[in-house]
Length: 248
Image (tube, rainbow, N blue to C red):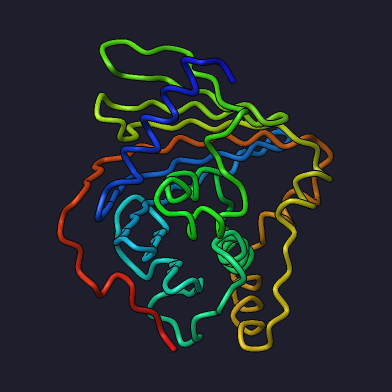
């Protein structure tokens, strides 16, 4: 990692390391292309954090925050995944990464790889639960103009471009990756065998084919692109405690 990138990442870490609270909201636009078929999806999201170590992530289907979101709550060192408003109790998970994998498997939703990037900056126990640190030696600061910055991370075939505002808050993220069908199915072929959610999975599969099933029928490589736009990022503002509640 070059000196300029290392200096920027240290400034970025300090911004998130010393806040009492953090919250954001935005939209993810994703397209998965395999052969001549393009599968598009829109998800909105929100993140809430209160120091020390209380984090919740909400993901909605569609462009607005209506309906029942997919949720992850991390509190007291424990991570839970659940569908808000459903009749299935929250699943306790080994880590935030594990909670994200379970949500992806149940919901037919595929992470753009940036979901845990910002949480990994906030607190050591959260960073450890993210399994890997996003802002690492694979990052390179491409441009910094008028205190605005463009950071690129390259890992294998996946390229992530992140644009930061002058105050080090994220404004825009673009992720693109190309992989073989076999690599995609291995990455997203997580099967959840817990008896209490098996019925939920079966109902979802009957309603629409899973992304895995669609791609299995194709012979081409898979190209994935997503754009994540943050509508707001707030530090040190009051946060309603209810965002950390989960069904028991």
